[in-house]
Length: 166
Image 1 (tube, one colour):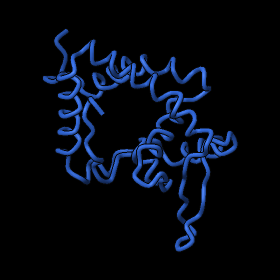
Image 2 (image 1 turned 90 degrees about the horizontal axis):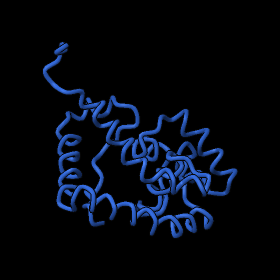
Image 3 (image 1 turned 45 degrees about the vertical axis):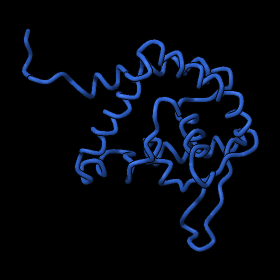
């Protein structure tokens, strides 16, 4: 059967690629009893310029729907991985930062994560990996803002571009 479509299913290819890549990282998280989503939150806050992020910003950056994020942040707070504080000027806003325990996790996991990225570079090539990042940025940034804004958890503004060597 030739199918009804001219184009390959890009969403499916992206998901399959994500699963293949996550196969490199899931085993690193398991000994620390971390989920992929928890690690995304920790990594996003750790990588932020200020060391803290507003909850809505975390939802967009980590592509986690707000209802799921609320429960997850509650559990992370209970596990002493994050701390939350209300913004004095706007009590509706809650800022989230890492605790010393999660900063220690970053220090322990960081070298292992970087080793997996180096392995990925050996598998696909450093230049190829850099090109993948570049092309994915092109796709994301080429879509109209209203399309991206309607996607669950979609970033409001593009992040600083990272290269494969960062």
